[in-house]
Length: 416
Ligand code: LLP
Image (cartoon, rainbow, N blue to C red; front, side, top):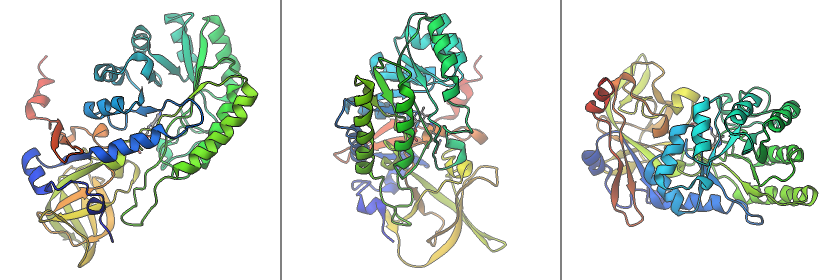
């Protein structure tokens, strides 16, 4: 068994004990080199045609990470008005933002329109609402290419069983409403779901989307969405990274066919969220109690479902490394253990029946691949305070990029 934090030099010589002493436990820790590296990979996803990828900020909306994305030349997409506001605050100009909402109020649509942000509408009703607000304007539409994919049924967003997007049979109604308000459809988008390690469904869905795009002459952009996975089992099962080369080759082949047939060449886009911050982030926490309940071993930590909800929400797997005296432990006796948090739910579990080195009270646990959908899905359940986030810079310096909540933050909401 190897150690990712050791082989990647993740902490750049910083001692996890010292970081927890300074910033508190639990703690999200990001590595800037790994983050920038994944951003650069995404920028090169399609090279043969003009390609402007969006970073889908729902995965991690830390302001520092957004500013790094801006520096690296990424555009962004957002799901809510406050995500839009955060992007504007980070310095993204409206032409570098795409709004991809679902079932939003007229006031959210109006916010996007007033700020000059192109919006991908995902139902005929939302097109109607937009048309009333901004007749004669440009819009994008989100289409369902009929193929979905993802690590769990809860995150598959295309195909037959989803609330998202406009299906093939709704295109005549869409065109009618767009015509009624003189809306110009300049972009079609899709997002088929989240976390797949094989490029095939993405390429198949993209081929379908390009076929649907034939209904919309004069498109300026076509956006293939996100979903690109990261190897969550890289330590435990030596899982290999997503094969970008295969994706690039597959996509460029279908784009070659499309541009010949379509007659003009739109700018192509994608919307990866997870892929960008996921492997650059780990979550550190402390073991406060170990026990054997009726033959089941438990390691009780401060890594509750309020801090990282993915394992309880989707049964997601995150590799875990045990750190003792500042170093990963990966040799010696092992045990089958349930790693749990400090929340009053039996489902408050980070790892179920996991083969790990014997864990002792006082150890630090390092949960890998926590940079995406970690902090962004955290909550104050049980009145627990959300943790701080720190960034280890390329030079090894540690920077606080979000402070932990305080009790006063919780109280402030009652100040009415
Ligand atoms: N574009 C749209 C319209 C989306 O809804 C999403 C994710 C993305 C792009 C980015 O997808 P990604 O590249 O990150 O797969 N909380 C779940 C994932 C939910 C994804 C929601 N939409 C998880 O922790 O696995």
